[in-house]
Figure (cartoon, rainbow, N blue to C red):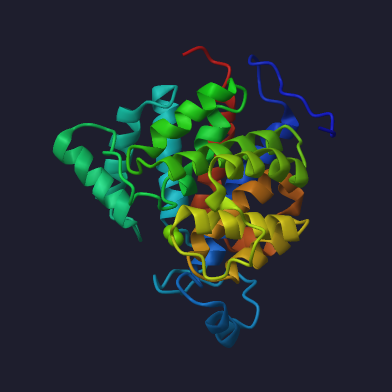
Length: 310
Ligand code: MG
Ligand code: MG
């Protein structure tokens, strides 16, 4: 594998380059969410009719958002990140309590599986959803970033375990687990300086080898649903077809469907890959200011958590 990037030691402060990529990943997640939410549940044809190419953060959409407002993809990530910082690790009970508090605060949107999982926790007190073949939605994958940041210098087995712990609070499904682990490993490697092709060759290929349904090159994925397989196919295609942050996000959200979530996931990966200088200033200025500050602060705190013995 070329590129010459190496994992850093597990102690001390994060490398400045990794830290700036982590902040860009978190801002990228929020930007993709805010951009995509305008066209969530629209078809590509409807998007063209309404906006031509949708390339501005303008709010609206079925949620009638303010320009720059984010949805559950970002706010659940922030709730998960706070739980990790409070616990000093990824602890299912802390995560479940944080999601419970998040739902009580009446978020702007919430997925069905997430709602069922949180209500299940309230009812049974157990922070693990029952195994389900029907829980292969993208709701656990969309919020995996805090785990990738907190675990970026941990052994791969630990990072994978943390992914599953956070995911299974609401989604207990092998495809969801595999998607979360793949995205966290891609993000970790991008923070360390790996390139786009390395991420796809290493991690998308490994995912497809275990779960062939994730194969993304066969045909163009438009109008991706909330099924995590379709979500990742659209994201991988947009990543492979572009070589900068802005183009990647415009590509993925104009496919419509679950566009805030494909936008958020693509934004996380492209932010980590291309770094803070690639984030369009007009988009950053349009992003809700409190959200922007929270993402920056939490990214730094989570990166600093790693290396602390738990
Ligand atoms: Mg959303
Ligand atoms: Mg969505």
